[in-house]
Length: 441
Image (cartoon, rainbow, N blue to C red; front, side, top):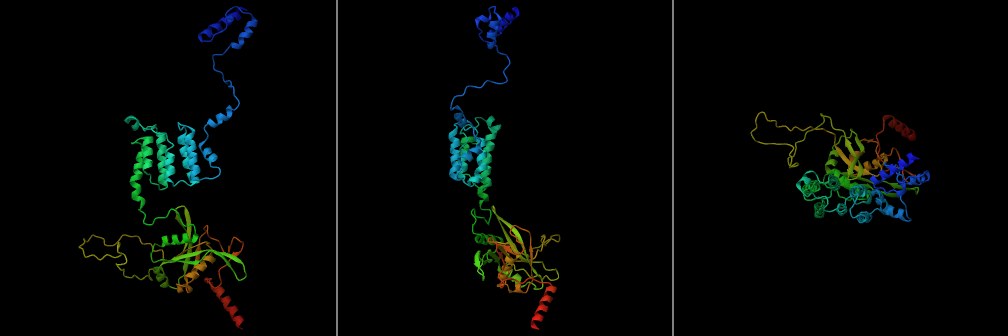
């Protein structure tokens, strides 16, 4: 009994030191019944492992879910469920700006927006990048003294701003005055994003027109027009003539069947026609391909008609005409006094790969389609009727071995009149001669 009363007195003293008021009855001599009532007020000095849950009211959970931070990518998915356009992308940015005045999570949102830009088709729109820079809080990350500027004030935000400018650089966009004003308001006049902006403004105009053969931003959608543009770019000859040997589209055969013929577009210059006319009919020519050609994000394939290089004993050196190459003459005839140690020869590694007579692009890379191209070339190059033609077709995405099966399930075969005769072996020629001899008998 005495021990229990002493325990109560110790609890009273500890409660006063901790600022806890115990009832006055706890100090007085007490009986076991009072001890049972006081046990409910006992608290351990150690912190509890599980905190009691607060009382929740009706409708409070729904309001907290709206105030919670939603992942930035989910924000794009929620707003742009129906269509992914520039308007919906700007709407997502407006929703994020209006959601919180402090713009908490703006760095994560900007990185998520940069990742989603190709899906919305706004990766080449300068106004969208300026609107994305406007997400940064203004005049918060500006250094106030030289020490803050020296120690890279707010490095994470500055790196994010540089990443936005690098994304613009990758897509070939030149920032404007609005971009500069936004960067100064956000990071100050001597920050890393401003230095990146100054480098872009200095170098972009210098390299903008450095390419003498620029590629348009929007390539033609018609495959025939795209093939004409690609072959003109490969030929690099103003005298080269582009010819459409076969238009794409359905054609009716004699039996009334409908067959979709592929397009065949070729290019040949007068110099190539001259080389082909001088070619030895005993030596074969080769059709090789497909070879890829990238035009921005579009990949097309072309085929060439070429021959093997001539052996050294058959090569004939013709005198060069100095008027044919004005900027880099092929032969120099100077009367200047030279030292005996001077080397007058050009140090150029010549690699003879053989002449290229023509090039083409087709909708199908099978031998039957390329055979029609050779037949069309034969109209302006009659020597092809005497020269054997061999096909060296590599495995490519446009190659179909043998006959080609169209979308309707029918097989495409070239017209018998335009089909080019391939070189046959001696055994086949002997069999044909025997058959013709039997028919005559």
